[in-house]
Image 1 (cartoon, rainbow, N blue to C red):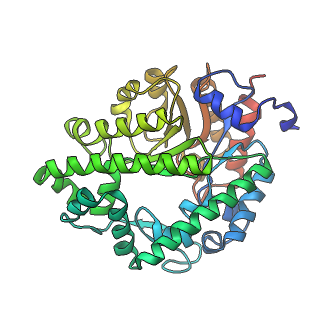
Image 2 (cartoon, rainbow, N blue to C red):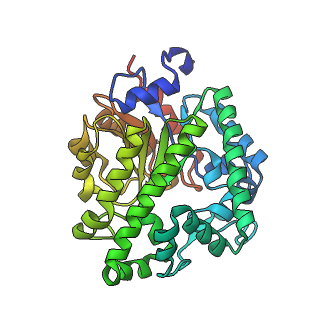
Amino acid sequence: MVMSKDVMTPEERFNATVRMEPVDRVLCAPLQGQYPGQFAGLTNAEFLWDMEKNRKAIDAMADAYPMWDMRELSSDIAAPFASRIGLMKSKFPGRDLPENAEYQNHELETLSREDYDLLLSQGFFPYMLKFWQTSNEISQGEVLAALHEVTEFNRVEMQHLASRGQIPYTAILGGIPFDLLMMARSFPQFIKDLFQVGDKVEAAVWKVAEGFSEMCIGAAKSCGINRVMVGGGRSNTSFIGPRQFKRFVWPQLKMYLEKMIAADLTPILHFDADWTGNLEFFLELPKGKFVLELDGFTDIFRAKEILGGHCALMGDMKSPLFATGTPDDVDAYAKKLIGTIGKGGGLIYSSGCSIPINARHENVKAFFDAVEKYGRYN
């Protein structure tokens, strides 16, 4: 059996990979997204709303693929939580959409330009409280209840993963401060703000970076997980120019990441969209202390050329390969990915963002089969 050859635990494998040290085999850590429900024969409404069915579906997938080391907790997309404390206004199957539709995030101008003053005077948490209440049209009590419920759900879920020999991707979801403000203001309004009230936006980004770093560190220490996902996809050269990046994104993000690293946490930079033009900035962060996770739009092979030996890379089996490719296509890319990015250490073998809901089952199998075919080093 595959597992009989393993000589490291998933946690040991993760930590060694981050430090770019030798491992027994490649760490396998695809983000399951909304796919497990389809794997288990559920509608997406059942998978996203019924947490018992959700867990059983993911467990069925884990039973089928025992080389799956690290998986995400369900709470960030689970409808009972994301419908109240998500990072954007969302629509869900079974409530707003057909039963087997994929859930959707909607771009809305939830908070006004005047709400920067709330953030600057009272801090990040009051700002987010107002965002959640306004976005989802709920009371402050409902928001606070959701925060309590998700904390308890994650605690139980982490115990469940431990009993199965898996580790959580993270229980703490961070974000790029610039992106968080943009999602509350909406893309068109936020871009106007950059040019019309740039000084206020810059001060607000620093405020978010300071407040969010404290919240992430406190939450991570409380739950006992030494890693934090920092998600983002709007702060790169696909969306803004170099001058905006250097003023509104990088100084605040760097401070935020360095604070977490100083607290012995490992930031996993879940960066969607094309970051190829921004890769050299990450050389300014401490070596072997963070993970750069890419979704298929950034050239991961170029990332290896620039950042190889400096940080671990995570990714990046592309969504189109899962959904429209063949098992041979998946196998060929896996061989290239593991052989090139994994050469010399530092690869977390994963999906590009999440496995798509319409992934072909035979392609998912080919993804996992590649771990044994190409990813064993001992």
